[in-house]
Length: 88
Image: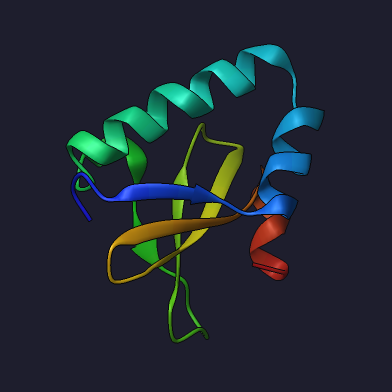
């Protein structure tokens, strides 16, 4: 996953714009870290239970990103509070 292009889905972009400015800033910092070191412990990257191809990572203790790993990119699906895990 290191250095793969990030693709922001339309739902991801819409949800991101609705978040507080500080969370948006932290999100971009975490995405930069993810591109450099996807196994960094602060990201808590793991495959979502009950799915075949959807992963999650932490932005903060309350905010998560769901994503899919494609051949040449990472597709960012959704961002939000822990409840997004109910609809990744």
